[in-house]
Length: 247
Image (tube, rainbow, N blue to C red; front, side, top):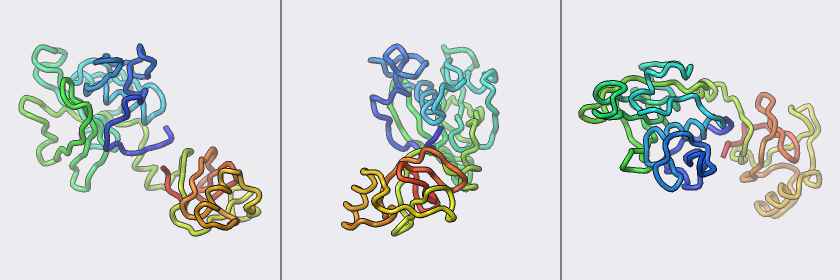
């Protein structure tokens, strides 16, 4: 996984993480219609983890209420929410579809008071929705549903964010009027000049400021292929990522 971007809107219908493998997608949950695994809470949640991780998760593919008890997946369980954890509810008797199949959702935000904001899908209903569940209510979903707990995401994203760990991917200069590009990771390395940048970088710089600046100006976008501490290797050279935002 290289991009911990929160999802607040519906995935594109061409997003392969939510398309069944039989239709050239990546999702192995039940196909609902025309190759899509949506609308369905399990298809969405399974696809969301695939999207975040960048590889196939070990989550269950059974009914939602069976996920929390499926410890063969190897993921930790908790009653405390964490970013991108799977929130699980059961309805009726476990492993019994006739009295309800339960529900699962992905935690996209954990508020200071313990409330959570989720992204999810509803079988036979909404393809995508964002919903808030309160800690005070015990994360109550609806009448007849019982909250089970959280299946924790295998990456501690919150810890990474606190440590300001940078990842490979696309960035934009947001906190510097001129960000020097260097031959290596660190200020002890030589600064590069405009003429040493890639054609794409030169075009962006000139479009933004109308002169040949010897560095990335505010708004320049680039891809980071390698990270060393807070430095990233871009096509034109190394830059300090403390002045950039991942996009």
